[in-house]
Image (cartoon, rainbow, N blue to C red):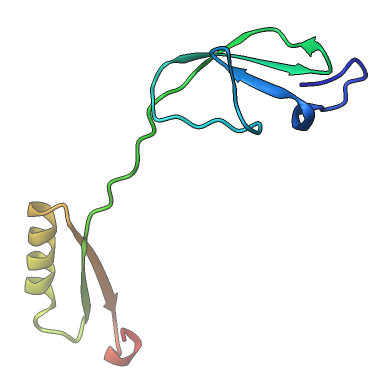
Length: 110
């Protein structure tokens, strides 16, 4: 809420939610509905506004598998292993493939 000079007077205001004064100036709810809100300070009343509260959704984290393959041109098993990693990743969306391919030296892969 602001006074006639544009100063923020929210801290000294009484906030009403659906006609009931709340303590402080922060309101939380777990109910999804439209609330009628107004503020009163020093005998001055703000206009009534409608505030629509929506349900809060949380992210549902799930476990994933990181499947790492390190290979190079020097590796005879690389083509078959690459096919297997790709096949597993295509059949299960919880598998995250990471494939590192190097041309010359196995040491640079690790």
